[in-house]
Length: 77
Image (cartoon, rainbow, N blue to C red):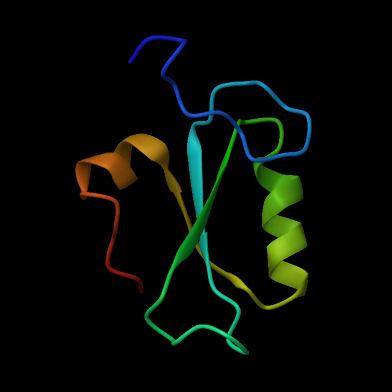
C-alpha cells in the first residue's frame, strides 16, 4: 500500500498511517455482534483505546495487517 492510499489514523488532526484497528460498539444503539472500527497509529492507539474503554465500547484491538488478512473481521474472544 502506498503512502497515498494507506489508512490514516482516526485521531483528530493526525495524518499518520494507521497500524491498529480498534473494534467497538455502543451497546445502547448497536446489536452485540455489530463492530464499528477506528484505526490508529502507534502514537494514538492507547489514547483512543482508553476513550472507548472508559465508555465500555472497546471490544478488540488488533494489528491492521491481521484485520485485513481476516477480511475486515476477526472472531472475538
